Length: 198
Picture 1: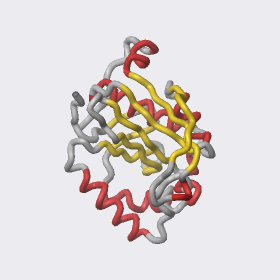
Picture 2: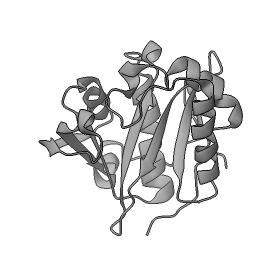
Picture 3: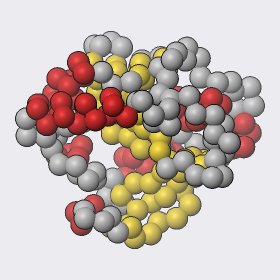
Picture 4: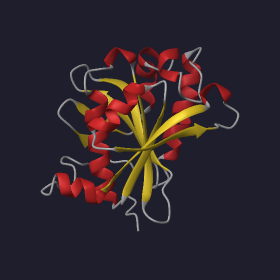
């Protein structure tokens, strides 16, 4: 059974992973939600104005009332800005879930998403009690696959995925997974993520 505790603040070497707040709208608009390169493999389109961003943000913040919501903004400590997001969803009856993420193009290829994803995987396995974490990326987005492999995830298959009402991102996807057993085998002394705050 999943030990649902809601989105907790996680502190890594370069990042703070925390809940979104209303003040994040400006960083979101400046750093990623207007960028077609970031939205290319998502069902949402680049935001045209900050009011659209604020509207989305209000909905996301409202979702924190549900303790089964796990949606973090990625804040870079060195500049105190929100630069992306990462979330867990699709929890099932056998204690599996999925992880998904997006990052401002300005911070690609710096190991930032790998750092964030490793922290979220540790949280999923050791704080929530998840058994397996799954994810996927479009075959034309290999950078996401590199993040997944750096986090220890295994490629399990590549197959066509039809995305309802979103033909532009339907296509071949690479599917990955990692288990709690694999994490324990690779890092037997690993403990729940440090500096976890409610």
